Image 1 (cartoon, rainbow, N blue to C red):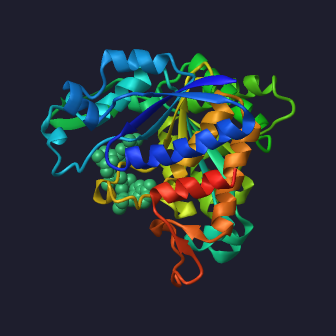
Image 2 (image 1 turned 30 degrees about the horizontal axis):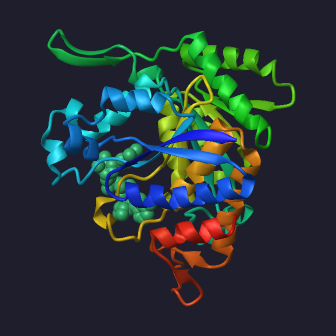
Length: 364
Ligand code: NAD
């Protein structure tokens, strides 16, 4: 089949990690008889340098024509780069916010998987790490506290600040549908996280989630309070498959879940809209400190490409092939320098960014 994939290489290590991921995608295309048409799209600092804007209208239109977009990362050194002397709406990150808004990306997916080969990086108890975990956080991205009305006022000489947490049933329904659809592609369990013992918005969340569940009799649903979930993530993360939650809870829990894997360079992410379209990117940033040195770890971007195949193109077998190839690379002791074993490099082969792409591609 033919598919159109936009590539936002971006800044810093972005071009290196997206090129490595593209090498892997090309190998998938060759092996499974697909054609991936690559269209490069400018966003971030490189777009500011070329056009004066972090994201142009033309770039948005190009992105909309794609089946999915793979992104590296955007931004530079926030203390020294001239991009950060510009007003906020002209800075690199403004491009990403605008793209998310223009494409209606309301669902953020952050998998957290502990590779047995890297379990010594896991900061949890050894017995917990030995059990392993493989979960995905599905976070609502465009509602809740971060988008509600807010103001600061002075009442009788005392300054008071107010934020509002609002969700309507449609916003909850569409993210719940995503979570149940994703669960069907995984181990068929959804944990919906809320604070229904206190918040009205959480009680509505619970009600609508249960209504959606009625269409997914093959998927298990459990509800969990957010404070308990924060504890369970460090006590027994292996119990989770799909964790469905609202914007702020998801913001906090997804960082906690990333932390317990111990390896930022391995974590992919996706933001989806109501169609199959999605924007796929590594969880890390543009790492200006190591840009241009061919030492960045491209695995998070390669795994983001696997998510792209799974969730936007419905190519599950091909996505599995990439994830298995990454496991094989680790089994074979191939490492970039950010995931080296603590006891030294005798047992491993240290490779750069582009070679890591090649090693994964070779194992497809
Ligand atoms: P960062 O994630 O870029 O770097 C933090 C540390 O992790 C650095 O030491 C870096 O070398 C290392 N690192 C990150 N990714 C790596 C990889 N793939 N392989 C090996 N090492 C890796 O975070 P930062 O330094 O706080 O931010 C740098 C820039 O990235 C800023 O401009 C920030 O705004 C931007 N940023 C962009 C995104 C995005 O594009 N979605 C996300 C986060 C940060």
